[in-house]
Image (cartoon, rainbow, N blue to C red; front, top):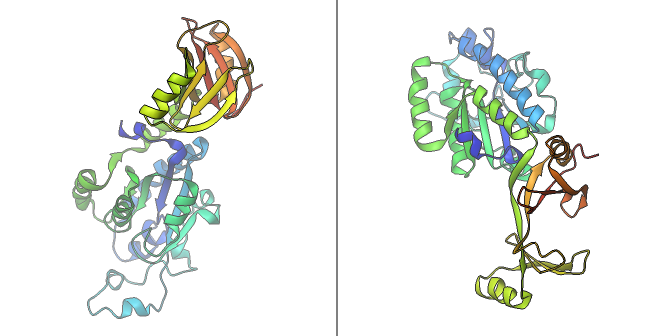
Length: 329
């Protein structure tokens, strides 16, 4: 599943224009003869997806389309705009038409995460890009209404800004069902990956379980530290992050690239002093290790990485797990 390649810590859910104007039978599209049933149908899976994101710590951002009764910019157009093809101007600022539908409104409680826009694109003349940058977001799960207008424009804008983009297809609705297959085909070819809310929820669930996430660093125990330093720093070009000493007095060189070098010391475990993995929930990992009868060398304990737990693998190699101390005793 493609979404498995993403990191929830740098992913956000973007909910586009789930407003009465576009989703309610009494909204602008509804009274203009557009079938809004597809928009009604995506509300339950979208609600569930938002709750899954909240539970997993994935930020949820919203866009609100807002129009003005008098729009001099649009009035300059000689050709008819899309708004002139409806019975009224949709989503006038401050009206019921512009409000998020009742089923989802309670979930959009943080005004800092609500992006107001005046054209199709979520990025066009809005603060969205800066907000995402400040939050460290690299990937977007895109949902909302409508398929061929605001959603597609926002997908294209996100892709052109080099975000990883996933369109959650069962949480996106359009005004013409016959247009949807073509939209999906074009998106999948050029702009994003297609997924479902169930697939995303399963990914979030698996990603939130305690476990090792990625190799953090490798510490080599060398016979001649000077020669090793010349090789790894002088020849390979690694750079020094810090120099310090272990508790037993051994010197330690830590590189910015994740490699550590130290002299052989007591015990002479071999060339690999220890392997370290970034992990989720160090406390839960310690509980799991105890339950499984694994060797706990020490920890959980405070470390320069937050919290560290040292385990022994079946061959006696030392494995460090480090990360946030969510439930550490």
